[in-house]
Image (cartoon, rainbow, N blue to C red; front, side, top):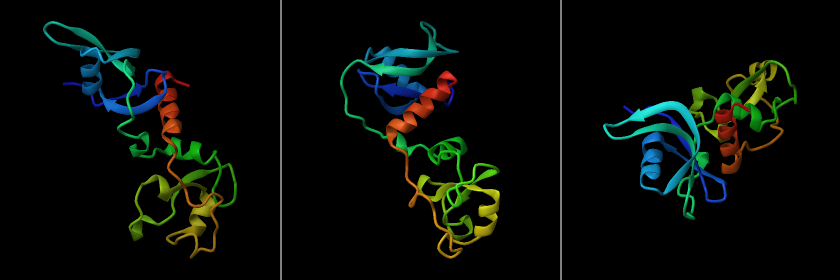
Amino acid sequence: MIPALQVLVLSTTYQPLYMVGVQKAITLLYLGKAVSVQDSEREIRSPSIVMRVPQAIRLLAKVVARRALDSLKPTRSAIFKRDKQQCQYCSGKTNLTIDHVVPRSRGGLDTWDNLVTACVRCNNRKGDRTPQEAQMTLLVAPPRTPRAIELAYELWGRLLGW
């Protein structure tokens, strides 16, 4: 069975385009539509082929990005990076947590536009209220989904251990 990993797809000019599953990436390599840029240590074997699992591939023909990277789920580290490692209410840089702008108890989701970095003090002060109800102002309102290129470089950095 193929591991549930994601592979970064680069354009012909090495610009990040989107992420695909390992099976799709290997299909693109096998069909000659892409070349591997970075391989992992894992291998996939068939009766006739042994292939290393790619971490990043480059397409050989120009394409228009079909899928944006902003469909990726936000991670704790990505939220902290987006918010420049500071509380979005008081600019503090210590004891950071993740805060839901619209609390989960009120239907708030784990989405890019509903998650912000907050220090423990501000997060507790806001509690189960919206920033408006708590009379707190977000430094950058509204929170935004990072551009696809920012997400791609974040993922590429994780793959290479930056």
